[in-house]
Image (cartoon, rainbow, N blue to C red; front, side, top):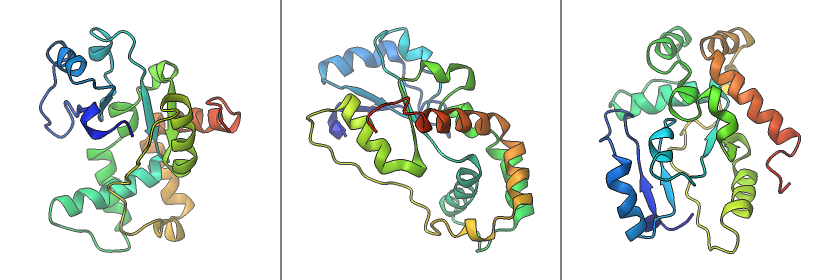
Length: 194
C-alpha cells in the first residue's frame, strides 16, 4: 500500500523468523523513509519503545474459518496437502495443538485491542481496505495484493455443522471474543468512513 520499499517486514518469533531488534532497525527505517512495520507480531511494545508514535493496525478473521484455512495452508507448505473434505477430528486436534487462539497470540492481544487504531476484518476486506486508505493513505496510489488465498475458497461453509463450529469456537474462545469486539465496532461505524 505504501510501496514495498517503505515497509519493514517483521515476523519476529513467528515460525522461527529472525528476530528484528527495533533499536537496530528504527534508524534504518528513518534513513530509508519507511512508514510501516508489517508482520505477525502482537508484541508492539518492542516497537513502541523506540517509535512512540507508532500506529498499530491489524486484520482479523472469523476464527473458525481462519483455523480451517490455516490447517490446509500448513499442510500444503509441509508438502502433505490434506484431502477435501477435512477430517474434522484431525482438524480439531490440529487446532488444539498448533493454533489455539492464534490471532490473540500473534496479532492482537485481547487486553490491548483498544490500543489498535484500526482493526479490519478479512470478511469485509475490500471495505476495510477502502476505510484504511481513507484514514491512513489518503491521496496515495495504492496497490493491494491478496496473498495466501485458500484454493478451496469458502466451500467448507457448506459442510461445517453447528456442532463442529462450536467445538472450534470453544478452543478459540479468546479469538472469538476479539472477533466479536471487532465485528461490533464495524457494525456501529467505529472506524468511520462507511
